[in-house]
Length: 458
Image 1 (cartoon, rainbow, N blue to C red):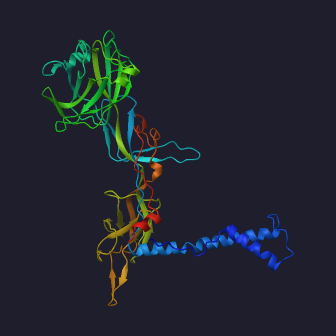
Image 2 (image 1 turned 180 degrees about the vertical axis):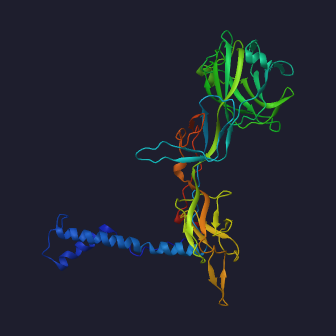
Image 3 (image 1 turned 30 degrees about the vertical axis):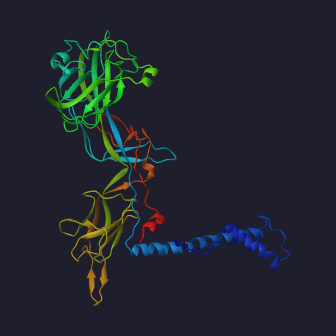
C-alpha cells in the first residue's frame, strides 16, 4: 500500500471564515449581523485569505522535502518531448537548378491576439532536385510476359508522336512507367500532359480508376502509393497538369532498365467505388507530349527552436558554479549542442555533458544540464574523510567566458497541431511560395510532473 503524505493543515479559506464566525457569539454576543456587508465580516475574510496563503505554503513543505530527497538520489524530471511533422515546401515555379531548404528552417502557425505562434524547425537540409527523366515505358498486363513498349523521349518531349498510355481497352495492372536517373524521394513531382481528347472514354473524370506509385528498390520489390495533389487532366482525358507527392524511393529494374520509377497503373474498382460512380476506361488515354518538373519537397520538422551562441557568464574560478540558460525547457541535446569555455588568451574548450559527477576527475571538462529548469552546473569540490578536498570535474579559470553553442527549446503537447496549421515561413527562401503540414504533428509530450517522477523513484 502506498504511503500518502498528510497535509500539515487541511483548512481552506471558507473553513477559516466559518470557524471565526462560530466564535463570535462567545466573544462578542452583541455582534449579530454576520452578513458579508458587515465591516467585521470583511476583516474576518481578509485575515482568512492571508491565513489561507500561509497554509498553502506550509502544505508545500512535504513536497519540497520530496524534491530534495529525489535530488539526493539523482532523480530529475524528464524533459518534454517535441512533436514532429512532415512539412511540405511548394515552389512558386519549377526551377532549372536545385533549390536548397536549409536545416533549421523555421515554420510556424499563424500568431493571433490570444495565441502565440508554434514554431517547428526542419531537421535536415532538403534539396529540391531537377527531375532527370530518362525512360518512358508502357506495359500491357494481359500480354504474355507483361510486354513493355519503350517511347522515344525526344519525340515525346517535342510532341511529335502520340501513343497509347495503356492497352486499347485498358485492363487492371496496365501501367505507364516514368524512369528517372535521380532520387526524387519526398518531392512534389509534376507532369505536364498534352492529351488527345478522343481517348480515355468511359470514366468519371473526377474519379479516374488509376493509382500513382513509386518504386521502393530491388530488395523490397514493392511499390508505394503516391498522393495526388492536383489533377487537371480529368483522368488523362484533357491536357493539363498532375502533381503527386512521391514517398521514399529506391532504384528498381523495369524491363532491364534500372532507375527511380514512378508509374500510373490501372487498378481494380471495388463494389463501393462502383456504387459511388467510378467506372473503368472503355478506351485508353492517348498522350501527345509529356514533361516532368519538381514543384517542391516534404521534409521532417520538429517542434523546437534553435538558440545559438548564448552567453552564460564568466567563471569566478571556484568549483560548483551554476549558470542558467535564458529559454526553457531545453530539449535533449544533439551533436554539437554543448558548452564551450573560452579562457582568456587561450583556445576555446568544448565541454562534455554528463548525467552526474560521480565518475568525473579533477581534469574532466564535464557539466550537467537540467532540461526543465535550464540550470547548467559545473563540478563541485567535496571534502574527503582524510580532510582533503577532491574536485569532481574541472574548474574553468577565472575570467573565462561560458557560451552554450546551441540548444533547442520547445516540446510539449501544444506541438501536436492539426494538419494545415504550420503555414508560415519565418524566413523567406528564394523560389519557395508557401509551406504547410499536410499531416497532423504527433509525439509531443509535456515535461514530467513531480507526481510521475515520485512513482518511478526507488
